Length: 199
Image (cartoon, rainbow, N blue to C red; front, side, top):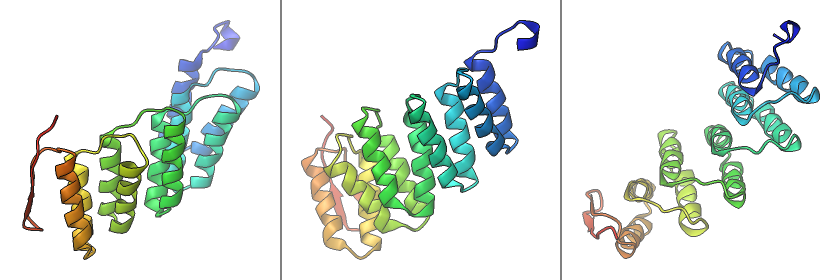
């Protein structure tokens, strides 16, 4: 394109990088990103996110972190998608400490997340049999975050506590649901009903 006198833009470069990643050539895609940035060519956040996702799919978390670091050095601000892909990678690895550190960093940068993100993390961990880790995520977001936690996430936490034999914790969560006036839900496994109304 440039030889024909047409200058490529961030969208064009992004399409090329996405194409490489879709073919599994993530390492080459990252090399292209670095060369473009060294030449002061535009690379947008979606292209970086694509490379991060490619490395995470290959379970190359250190490479994904390198891309993440490269973004910051080049003053490309990671968005919620970049964070969520990395967090997913660390959840899959079972490194909940790192996943929660990324959650805290995301929040400290003022990047918005919501109850669906929390629910997704908990469901993902429970699906892998990591019930304790799911409860740690729930505890973080209910005690250290401003994100509203919905009834579904409460149910997941209650069920996880029950399966771990932590019945007192499970019943405590039911009471917390009531105090927060979260919508009615029947906790059949406990033989209890958490009632309330949304404000």
